[in-house]
Image (cartoon, rainbow, N blue to C red):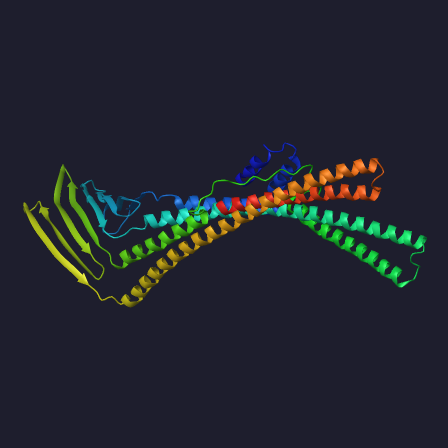
Length: 463
């Protein structure tokens, strides 16, 4: 709707009588099947983008598993009772658990509480910016595609209208020429300047038939164009009551449009994709975790059988990893703490090293390719802008000449009327002068429609 609104803003202040053109363009936008397809595709794309842009939320889980009847256990055994929370980026996880057993015979119950928390620090390049850039590039492409499609449809309406006006003028000229040929032939036959069946008469008759065929051909062309007009707008073709003067944007950017911006974003996407993949192949992660658990029995009172805690620090660097764990357990029966420490590490050969290196090289080349495409897109945009501005300058010059031509034809027609009233000019000469003025004004109408289409071309380029 924005594209149409801009066009109407250009039109309405200049000519309030351009209601027909406004109605036609609105009909093309609201009643056209193509416009409806564009709108549905646009809305579906926006919904997809909104879905992609939604941030992941923290995940929670609650687990419970109980065995009221179990062999070897004379009671209710809850083997799993836990709650876990994980942050959206999966860097932090917290888990609390407390399975237990309650004896049927009333001898007591036993609880096994536990707690664990872990967090990892990733010193590599995450993919958050990559996702944001991809979504923004898709949004720009979606907006441009929709708006360009609507502007293209409006330009088609204007171009078809201009073609029909041109054909109507050609038909008028052919009909005037045909009428003149017929009249001259009838006069020459009456005056016996030529005789029926003579070579001259046959040639003139063939010329008349050729003009009739040309008119019929033009009528068929107009019928085809009128059908295209109706398919676009849902309206039957009728000449406009008036055609407004085009208005061209006076401010435009040499830095590019949305297509150039999309190319720039895709260049950044390629760069981010390389960094993300490099980080995945060469990870640098520090992980911290803490685990605590215990056993509590309840008979006449609460009593802790044992409890322990273990903290772990680990480093992962792809092919090799190292971790250190330390902690201890309290044994109530022996009234002592048993400390423990564990140091471990691992290393593995890189079986996919060559394949990964080639993929990274591909991404590096993709980054250079996208950068080049950005520069080419910017260059093409500037060339197109210069071309459109040149066309506008040429149109404005032609418009000025046509205005001068109309003023000249008005003066000639006025003089012809004065001469005719004094008997100094024939009726045919008077008609020719009037038609020359009509032709100049009709050509101006075609020129205005072409100018309106050109203004939409500039607007489309600047999207």
